[in-house]
Image 1 (spheres, rainbow, N blue to C red):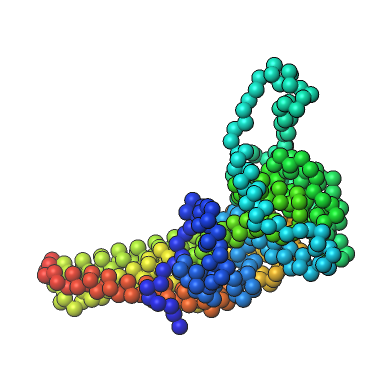
Image 2 (cartoon, rainbow, N blue to C red):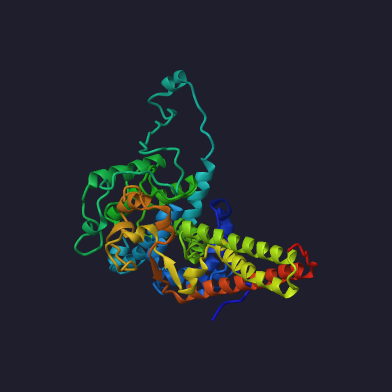
Length: 453
C-alpha cells in the first residue's frame, strides 16, 4: 500500500518561517490541539506519524520519541523545547494528583491576570529616562530617587541566541533522578543555594522585588526549571521573547499552578508541531547517510551519461533504430536513482527496507535503542546543556574513512507508515524515469543513422 503519487515530502521549515507571533500563533496552537492529525497531513505527514501519535508512543523506530529527541540534539541543536514539553506534560499530571488542600496553595493564574501583566510590561518596555549623577545625588534618600539597577551575571556567551545552548560543565546541575523527594511531590535540596540564587537573579532581572512563596507545592522544582530553562545564560534556555519571559516569571512569583506556563507552553508546543516535527519527518524519510546519498547521486548521473553515450554511439553507427532502445536501460536506472537520491533515498537500501544507522547509534552499547528511559541523558529534565561534542562516538565516527561511511551498518525500518512513504517516493522515481526515458529514447530513435561505422 502506498500514498497518492502526488505526495510531497514535508517542506523544510526554518526558524524565520516558523516565527508567527500573537493571535496567529495562538490560533494555530488551538487548531493543532483540537484536530492535530488533520493539520499534520497539510505538511505531507500521514496521520500515523502525527505529532500526537509520536508523543503517545504509538510509532516504531526510527520515528519514536527517542529518535525525535536525538534528531533535535544532534541535527537541529534545539532539544530544549521537547525536554521542556515532556516535563510540563508530566507536571500537569503530578499537579492534578495533589490533595485539594495542597493545590489550593497555588491559585490558578487567570487570563485576566496574564493580560494585565502583558499590558504592564508593554507600558514599561520603552527606554527609561536617564538622569545625571548630580541630579541623582540631590534626590538620594527621597521618594524621587532613581531605582538601583540590578545586574544579573550571565554565564557563557551572551551573544549566543537560543535555541543554541552554551557548553557548560555536565556536573553543574544535579541529575533529576537523585533529586526527587520520597513522595515525588518536590525536589531534594541538592545544591539548593546554587539554583535558588540563580532563580532569585532571574526574578531580579525581571524587576520583581519579592520572593516567591515557598509554601506552595513544587516550589523547589519550579526554581530549578527557572534555572535550567528560563534564566539568562541557562544551560537549556528557551527561545522566548523578553515579554514572554518577564510575564512568565511574574506569574511564577505568585503561583506554581500549571496555568502560569500557559503562554510559554503554547509557544513551545507550537514550535514543536509546526517546525521541529515536520523537519524530523522530512529527515527520517532519508534512509542513507550523507556520503551514501551523494554516492547514489553520482551513480544516477553516471547511469544517465551511460545512456546518452550508448544512444549516441548506436545512432552514429549503421545499426537499426531498434537497437537504440537499449539506451533506455541506462536512462531508466540513472534517472530513477538520481530522483530518489534527490529525495534523500538510496534505492538499494529501499529495496530491502533498510536504513543506515545514525552515527550516534553505531557505537552504542545498548541494542535496545528505542527504550524510553526518562532518568538518563537527554530525557533528564534537569541535566546539563545539550552539547554532544565530548561524546565518544563523535571522535570515532570522524576517524571512519569515506568508503566505510558509504557502506555503513544497516537496520530494518520498523515503522510501516515510513516504509509506505518511501515506497511512494520510489514509485514516483520510477514514473519520472519512465516518462523522461520515453522522451529521450524517442528523440534518438527519430534521428537518422550516421553510418560512420
